[in-house]
Length: 142
Figure 1 (cartoon, rainbow, N blue to C red):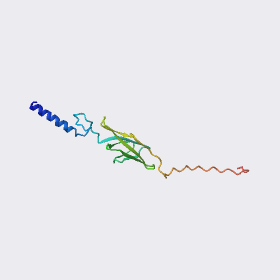
Figure 2 (cartoon, rainbow, N blue to C red):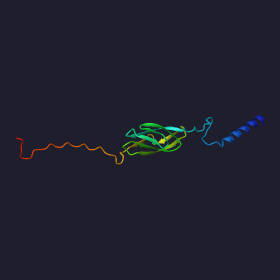
Figure 3 (cartoon, one colour):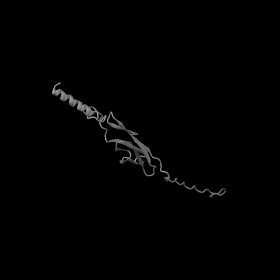
Figure 4 (spheres, helix red, strand yellow):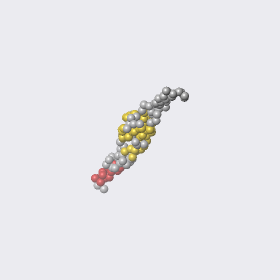
């Protein structure tokens, strides 16, 4: 074996040995490893009635219907609130998609059906007009 071949073999052995300690899926881009997940992703938020404030446990907020950028690091919750309605909180799960280098939110879109707040005053019923007085029996207006 020539000196050049021995050096090439030693370099290859060193390179392959170093790769064994590299985290699986980390990849260099050159060697076809899985691409890194994005730090944030968009999620759609909506409510009935619309116009509710949607706040995530991750820190973002908007008025429905809207789209927010949220961190992809783990699950979070969204609380929907609107004056006159009971607030509602929805849990959101984040599932990585290694093949597409993205995440899947469940549910997406996040939707809340807001009901009336407990103790909320209902609109008063319309008052009925009084019936006109009728003449007493046996009397006539003549």
